[in-house]
Image 1 (tube, one colour):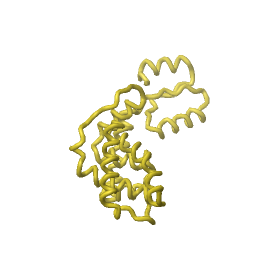
Image 2 (cartoon, helix red, strand yellow; image 1 turned 90 degrees about the vertical axis):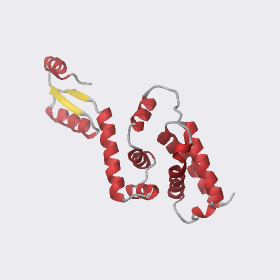
Image 3 (tube, rainbow, N blue to C red; image 1 turned 60 degrees about the horizontal axis):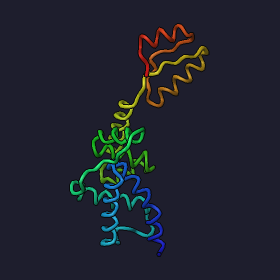
Image 4 (tube, rainbow, N blue to C red; image 1 turned 45 degrees about the horizontal axis):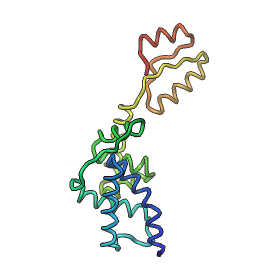
Length: 188
């Protein structure tokens, strides 16, 4: 196996992971990966030996995606739990928002690389990423009641809770105040 093939093979598991997250189904995702690899067999010139192989592979994948997206039937993986919930939340995002979010957050591409893969401007990729994050945060944000009697610590906890997308509905230093705030604000 030549060096180019070895480098390509190294990135296929990442492409499969991405395709699964994108489609909501390992089976459907693998169908896209298969079509992508078939396209590369037909057009090997699409991969430059000295280029970023992962970036090139994902770019070819999205070129294929744009052509055959409606041709591969939808299917959903069975299951329950946090992974299923995340798939459901991702499925509610507009397709381009979901693609940018997954390329940046799951696959570690820069916004610039994601824009190149998706053939959009960097500004548009940045906007789509912000829209996706805002929507996921809206869907997953919890209402948090902080119970802490040290003001400096409760401020630190509040900052952490807010930084990860949750809302602080109150801070209580005593049990009685916590019970009263919990009844009033119904934290999650």
